[in-house]
Amino acid sequence: MTATILDGELLASRIKAELTDRVARLRAEGREVGLGTILVGDDVPSARYVQLKHEDCAEVGIASHGTHLGSDATQAQLMEAVDRFNTDPAVSAFLVQVPLPDGFDEQRALFAVDPDKDADGLHPINLGKLLMGAPGVLPCTPLGIVELLFAYDVPVEGHHVVVIGRGLTIGRPLAALLASKRPGCNAAVTVVHTGVPDFRDIVRTADVVIAAAGRAGLVTPDMVKPGAAVVGAGTTFEGRRLVSDVDESVAEVAGWITPRLGGVGPMTRAMLLRNAVAAAERQP
Image 1 (cartoon, helix red, strand yellow):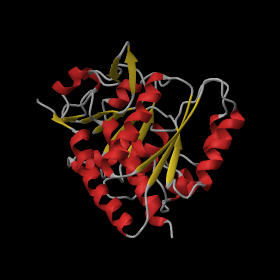
Image 2 (cartoon, rainbow, N blue to C red; image 1 turned 90 degrees about the vertical axis):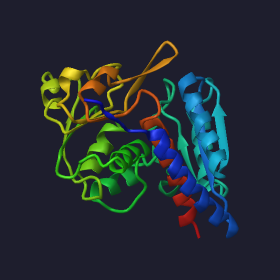
Image 3 (cartoon, rainbow, N blue to C red; image 1 turned 60 degrees about the vertical axis):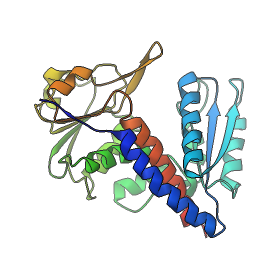
């Protein structure tokens, strides 16, 4: 069996083309779109990820507003940066890059973000709207995964999806999104993690497997039902090499699979841009 590649890079390029048109229409009305980022410390992967976000902004015509606080910054300085972006009319939406360095109160920073400017969709008000099925800003990675599965006609509605991982940015909101009555969702969702002794047996029952545990090569071919769709949403670094939660040999049994590079990552960033454009469109 040769798995169909879930090409996030290709789909993201199509989404960015559509966003370019929306940004141009806003500009014609005298309105600009601005995305802000707050980076704290000198974590190399985080810095690279923020850099990619700003490159994406330039590609579609969104203005970038970056704040970088050094490793010696204080919580008070971080909160001041959040307050500045909350009140800056040039910033349509923004994010605090997580994880933050040790010693910072991540929840306090995320709670302080204006929910209407929440580019990541991680503010408790927006997460609450997701659980209630109300319109609101959706988390970028979960939404990107749903869009990717939908674009490649992966059967999700009424099927069994197993999410490996229960983190705030992917696992928990993704499970809620997939179980909701939305197009491309409405699935039977099971959330497992490495603390569940028999989680591999549960994964074998899944029509769709989404690995978001941040453990390299966690999902192996013997854990996957032949023909299932497999998404590697969690990543780790082995030296300078980015490695997926899904072993590459899973492609031998899967029906659909994300590549090691160019799968979920580009879709996450595309959804971030979409959230920023939507925020600008909501502004009077």
